[in-house]
Image (cartoon, rainbow, N blue to C red; front, side, top):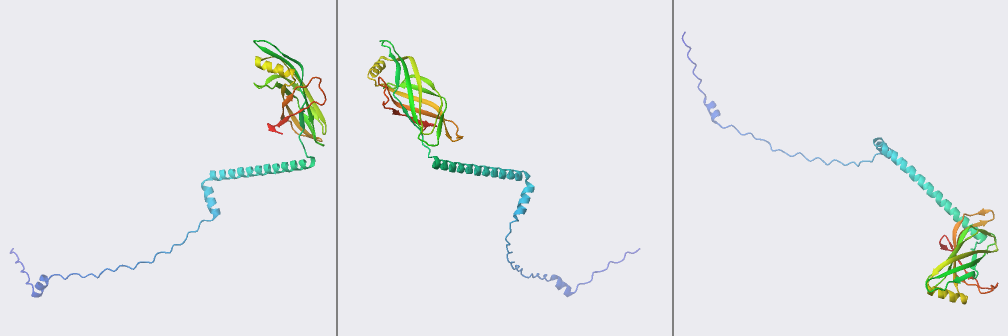
Amino acid sequence: MDDKPSLAPKPKTKAAVAAAAAPAPARTTAPLKKPPLAPPPQMIPLKPPPAHHYRQQRGSGAPRKRHRSGSGCSGRRVCCLATGFLLLALCLAVAAACLAYLCYHPRPPSFHLQPVSTTRFRVGNSSAVSAMDVTAAVKVVSWNPNDKIAFEYGDGEGRVSLADSDGDITLGWAPVGGFEHGARRVAVVGFVAAAKGVVVDEAVAARVRDGYRRRRLAFKVVVDTHMGVRVGAVRTGMVPVRLSCDDGVMAPRGVSAGSPMSRCQVYLLRMTW
C-alpha cells in the first residue's frame, strides 16, 4: 500500500502571530482593606453562688469536714455553757459572801501567849559537852469577838524552842487536842513539851544559865492545827492554820495573874490572818 502523504501545517495568520508574541497582560489585584475592629465585649460581673448552694457543694465533696465542723461547733457550745455556769456560780458565791459579811460582821479570833513556865530546867556544866534537860508548860489564850460565829479546831501539834543569838534551840513538841470555841468566849489551850539531853556548846550553855537566873529567857511557840467555822447549823470545811508566837517570855517566880502576855500571829493557808 502506498503511504498517505502528511498534511502540511496551516500557515498562521498575522493576528495569531502577533497575539502569541505580545506579552501576557499583568493581573491587577484590588488592595486589601482591614476589617473594622469590633467593639470590646462588655464584661458582665459574676455573681457568687448562693450560700446554701456553696454549702451543699462543699458538704457533698467533703463529708468528713462537715462532720468535724459539727463536732467543733458542739464543743464550743459546751465550753461556752460551762464557762457561763462557772461565772454564774462565782457571782452567786460572791453575793452570798457579801450578804454574810453584812449580816454577821465576822472578825478573826485573837491569840495571846502566857509566860512560859519551866517545871524542869537543867544545864550540864562540863568542859567537853553541855546538855540541857527542859520541861516547858505552854498556855495560849484565845478570844472570840463574834456574836454569832463559832470556831472549831482539830487536833494539832505544838513545838517550843528557846531563842538564842546563835540560833533557836528546839526543846520538844507535844500533841494539842481539838476544841470548839463558842461566840463571845475565852478559850485556853495548853500543852507540855519536854526535851532531854539537848547538846549545846559552852558559850550557849553559859548564856542560857545566865538568862535562867535572871528570868529573861525568850521562847518561841508554834502550833499547827486545822480550823473550821460554824454559823448556826452550817459548818465549813477545815483548813490548815498555823499559830506563831515569837515573843514568849519566861514566867517569873510565883506566877501571878497579872503577868504580861505576848500576842501571837495567825497564818491561814500560809497567809497572815
